[in-house]
Length: 507
Image (cartoon, rainbow, N blue to C red; front, side, top):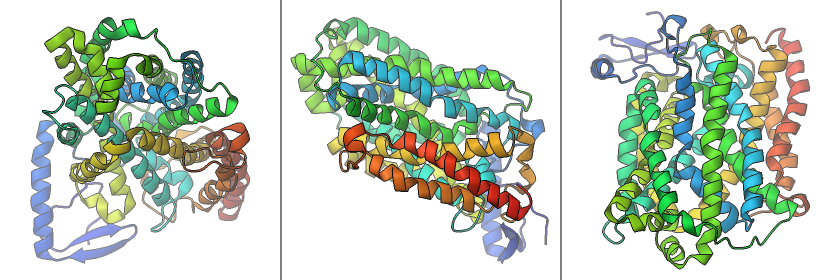
């Protein structure tokens, strides 16, 4: 028997033990030879900037990324894209808010909901652990429950964002020459390029996000210059009541809070002594600075669509991508080139999200740690393409249903991991012992976390306000599900976790 290793794949040519938590099972020589060949290929790819490591903790000597501003450019590029514009458009087009009300809701909820992911990003350098691996230190790590449940929820959530990005990018690409390129072809093109970027991993992603926002910024400025003259033609707001405002606020929360389940994935190679206040400030700015202006721009575009016939026709044909194409149409051929660049703006978000989901695959089962991370990127894109093609037919309904719902579980998750870190670990990152990250017995049982999260939904459901369901409380207050999820989960987790620690005698 050989000792356990952090290497994703073993290259021994004889019988090799595969670690499944604490047990070992043997594979035959033929299987081990094929694993060895994959390992050899994977090692060669590492010479071309492809990240060959997976979910194992990053040792301190490898945490050398000291350009802390890259966490800002990373989140800036993820959010400086059409996803932010589309979310803002829903305020005026779907919720019927005025531009003023939309702008205030966007500003307030963006400032509030950017705090949790920015705070959790600071734990990446301190622990060297991926975000959902950190979750094991509160949810535990058992075969059929524990951190596996939030991992599955996170995979569904982040993959959903990839689908939205594919739809937006595909529709915008199709709007360049309506009739010559279909939405479906546009989606396939966007997804294939996403795969190429996400396949390479951490370092290439950071390099891409460092510069990819520049042409997008130029395109937005040009679009404002060619189409901005119509933005003052705002349709009057239909609703001004608190329930509508809170429901749209829940949508904004669903945009930001899910970042909390992957924020530190992009900072694990930064040194442990990275100033936490700098990491927080860079991450917070990376969320707020690009998103608020683009969402407000989206709200302005959505408010003008009913009063600008060319925009309304383009919206009916190619949704939001068509409107942007109409805004840039005065620039003729150059405007079409700008539309193509805007279509690719979703790549930064999609590639980073696909990277995080590929890591989540390795967290589902111990045996999946042996599979190279990048191979899961291929699986994700293979799933995203047909789902995106289906989602095109009812995009805005799909967007609202999806983003609105994911805020609930994400808020409960944030409440648990932040309470664990601040209250029970006293903000001490050294309590996250990397040596036990896959030891189910040494990690918490997860009963406290799962019980708190599950029981909170008894009150979350009555407070939900969605197109397909409105709870009795939400009928009077609007959607306050994510606020209730956070507060109630904290109140439940505190006593549950205290009892768990008393019984076990340790964290």
